[in-house]
Amino acid sequence: MDVHSFANIERKGLINMPNKVYDILKWIAQILLPAIGTLYFALANIWNLPYPQEVVGTITAVDAFLGVVLGVSTAQYNKENQNLDLTTGDPWY
Image 1 (cartoon, rainbow, N blue to C red):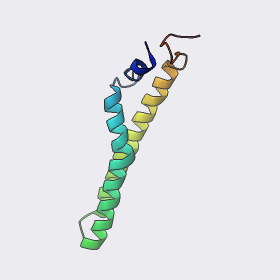
Image 2 (tube, one colour):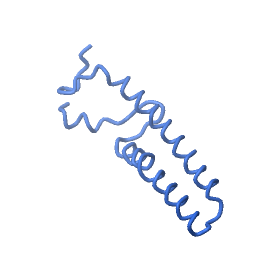
Image 3 (cartoon, one colour):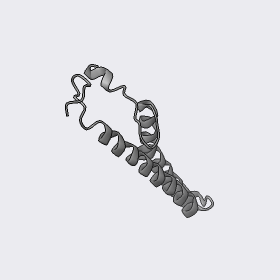
């Protein structure tokens, strides 16, 4: 296994997911949900949209949950791969 194929190893552990899925969920948690929550809260105050605190609170709760799940997945992935030689893909322990 070379360095390039190492990047394609699937994330295993709590939830089995390919790296592409993990990367998309991470982008949603770090970029999209906070942006949507901020946008709705700002526009709700300007345009008197309904339930700004409830909507933003819900978005924040979903975002926090997603962050925890991704954090656990990352910790398990790192633990399982801590002894992997990145140049060959072989265990070096």
